[in-house]
Length: 129
Image 1 (cartoon, rainbow, N blue to C red):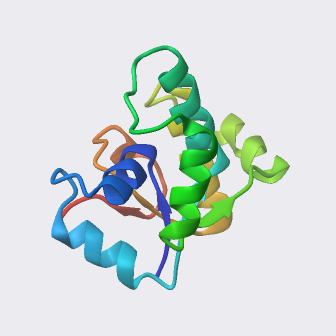
Image 2 (image 1 turned 45 degrees about the vertical axis):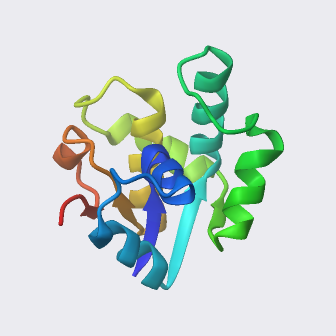
């Protein structure tokens, strides 16, 4: 199983947050590969700078170091993934989440999230216990 972690899932995983279910934790730890998108790094950095996302340390270099420490791979944003935006239904207005859905579809990854709106998209999801 190849997973793409939604931003909140990644942050909960690396910080040991109790909101991350054991089911998700096990899936991430046992995945063939787990990815963090550069889109999530962008989202976390923007929200941190706006004061909407408290982090234990500034995002640079903390997010990179945590991704590496936990054996999570980086997923770059490809032109092909971005081009999928035009075909994506407008269920969600959050541009970061829409891009993660496009990446999951393009790269054939299972998107790990608890966002109920994302469940409406045509992507493979790992959303519940």
